[in-house]
Image 1: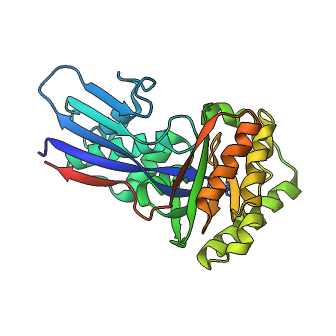
Image 2 (image 1 turned 90 degrees about the horizontal axis):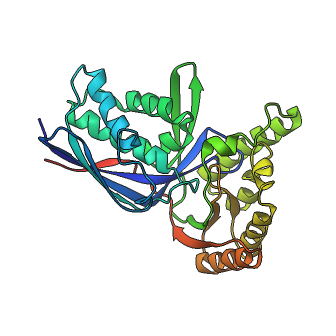
Length: 304
């Protein structure tokens, strides 16, 4: 049996505006996690980078819990391990940190337990832990994914996205959780709002496939979740306006927020500057990060 493995998992953005709980995209921002089997009674967890003072280092740790699942599925007692995390993905910012943790643990556990689980198995298991497949699917497969749930089955399809596209992130200092953010959403929506999002999701998929960049601003608009999430901090709309007025192709909340993500094919630094300036004038503290979508999903770096 291999005794050590290192896995890299990307940040992900979910929804992309109208694709609530079904669309996700991987970003070129990575967590790197090393798992080493050790001859000790207790598991050890060390964390550096993002979340080092916030993430649980005991049995509640999401990576550790996920790591054990493939062993349990294979009827093998999970080994005692040391986990070393180097995190670039911010915590509680709507950039898929929990999905990266879940997928990293599952992949490592699957590799070290004999690769009994398929990629589809990992997707279904990860979704059962996360509760929604948008980030999970992109974290596993990379690129831009649209995923539907049919009973217990999940069907995911890749949406090609131009390598001309960059992403500009405004990451506020405030944090949120998906659970807390979902509590802001209504239990029922008007049928016209459903149609609004369905039509734009269709247009968004077609526009990404065909590089129809001029459609992206309209295609990423939403009425199912963003208006309700804006209520807590309506000034964030100023960051949206600044992104579009300075040349962004589209702008939306990344997942449940609070990060605001703009798509662009040029002027990235100008757009980032204007978004940061609008945030500062609105008394919203945060920082800008410029990156790109990545077609690469989570992968094994080394296996010893």
